[in-house]
Length: 397
Image (cartoon, rainbow, N blue to C red):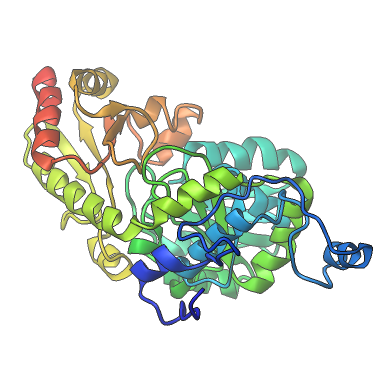
């Protein structure tokens, strides 16, 4: 393989080239290593591998060449030192928490996070003695006030799901450092193509690779990116022992997805902005949430932190759930599904899907009302998407 100049490569080149070390077969595309175990030249080499004295493959629960290529590529794109791949995005969040927390520790999280993340924190980790406080994503003073002596982690999604609120990553990183805590950023909505939280002071990034890293809705996976000391230490140790591992086949699919990540994310963002501007002009739409709109409360902050607004937008209709469901059911082109990050545009009603299992009080605190609809804009022609959404508007008039 040619000399690796990946530290000097641009983003698009890293997305295509990083991590692949060709085998003796001289393959051009990354191979899939579908093996559970590996052989050794001698008993001594096996012992050295297992003890960590010699690097190399041991068992595919925690060492697999295809998964490693994915990890190295995503770490390069996020400009981090180390990446650990997991079985899902939720597995990535669980791995971080199980690696770095113990009974009696305290976590501060945004109210504006994915519904299952809230349930993981409260209903599962809470049973093991970890305490959680939920504050406004956009008010740093609330984070500072919530700090305790046992606060270990600050956890955010930015942009948030589904209201696309923007956190000031640098400000929260300073608060975390002052309190002796770590800042964890879920970067699923932007990906490193549009936002790099580590460069803004975050300590760890978590991903649902299922979304934009894949880009075509094919596989489930997750990842954690950060420093070698942090990710290569306790985080890797937990994955090695507990085994929330990514499959080699899924890692290969994500590698193929990342090759076009920059192109797709900027195309998603351009179409989402066009749709957001169009929706904002519709009389039956009471509010549109999208970071690329000048009406967005954190528009200037988003412009500083992100290179584009991303592919997700939300909007509110008067008439609550009845109006939202009639709008959704009237569409014909877009897909009614809660997934996002696909080339196909998707539409969902957050209050009864992604956030349906959290309490009505928690939904209200997060600003998720019954008239809210979320759209993850795909790569279809914008004119066709407008025509389809017009069916929804017509249905509620």
